[in-house]
View 1 (tube, rainbow, N blue to C red):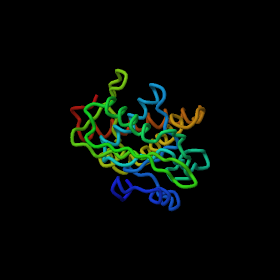
View 2: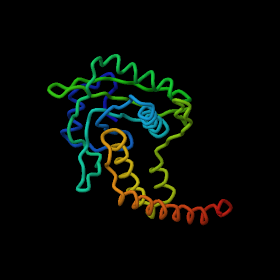
View 3: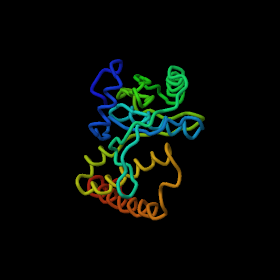
View 4: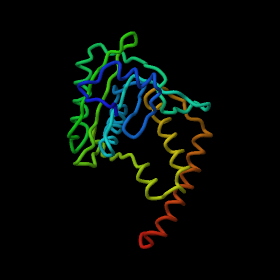
Length: 220
């Protein structure tokens, strides 16, 4: 989350994130594009918003790309400002607010949306989501009924160091998913899909072992 009050966010604050390479964390996320044209895009956008509300809250900045590693996987480190093509910033912010208002239940108590013009770059949109006291929130847009929550921190606490490798891998996959959903197609390879399947199987075994040890009555 930007370390300033929402109403005080200025272009310099956003430029500083890029110039100082401030990495994503659980309260800060970068998106290169804002795509809410189709029903699936709107549902994916709402999933990100509800996940923040269900976790610790934070800021999502649309219009900032992040660096890629040697495999093309997003690193979470901001690369450059990729300005959004927004004809009427006020109308676009109102459209986003309306989508959040009508597409998530229960309604998130605290959401703010702001368009920030970055001189010599263009427009970035900031969505600040407050940590909710009425969570969990569910995406209900177009009759969907999905709960989303950022669970990596909780899994680390419960499973300990033995889960670190899997959780780091899944976090990298989540970042790549954002690239697929928001930026471009044909990003994930068949090999990567196979790796996800294998890692998911290993993680399942780890979770089942943990349940057998700590909650044997719940084990299969």
